[in-house]
Image: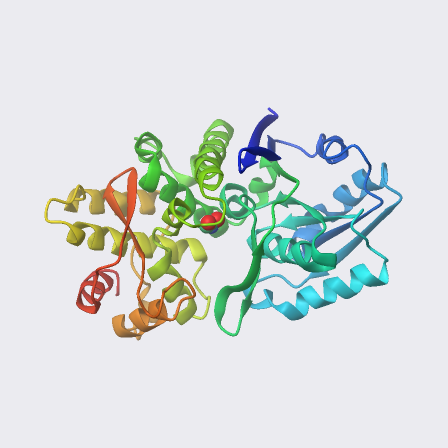
Length: 370
Ligand code: GLY
């Protein structure tokens, strides 16, 4: 450590992802983003993350930058709202922020997406960097420039593509992460294995692996390999015209469940349930599908290793397959109710399929309902 992974966009260097186990090199990395130094910095975070890291981060930045301010939101998906971004705009205006200044997202996916959206839209775009502090944000949401907020009850309905200028990961932040949050990130990690890296998937399932016993080397391998998977996809298709859609494996059904359970289940848990249902559908998509019942039982075993459900918990037993299908069809990614569904041709190889009908969905979803 540290490990540097450069990301390109349209064949040009875009930004570095740094994987480290401390914040020692943070300021040096910010200083080297561009030749001219930023005038002012605003650190955007939530009140939970602030308790753990804001003093340390602000002290480090203040040693080099004269004006370092903070803006702290209430945590949680329910606060991923335009009104919170408006509060941040007003804070930036009140502190005379210009395009020569920098926004920093310190926290998980909600903080990163919202801060990125503010950076994309304030003065038609200012620089921002990501300091992701959850596994999910380190392996997924901080990379690739998707930013946004929820609107009405639709997830990430309002947003923009806006690349960060740096992603700085301190793996030590994972040590204080609640277990469910670590599991949640593992949902996306397992997804990378399933859609594009069979060896990684086998490694995740290998003998003796347990969520609570992951070593520092294991965590490093998990984060680095996941980032390399995401890098490959976002470099090829930064704006999701094609292959980037494969990252939505498990998400079409997962998002619908997440919304119908009122966000009481973690995103990773919903994606896990969605992946199991998507495997049933993958089997159905072709007569000689490369997916078998053994693949489904293997996935269920891996989800169990990492503390993820493979079935909607019984407390949501009133959930009906038909409600899930309606929610899927009203998702922003559905085209006039037609869903581009991500399936697996085999473990490690994804594809999209447009021809499932309601009874196909019904059969698969019923396999994951209590
Ligand atoms: N999290 C999915 C994507 O970045 O495209």
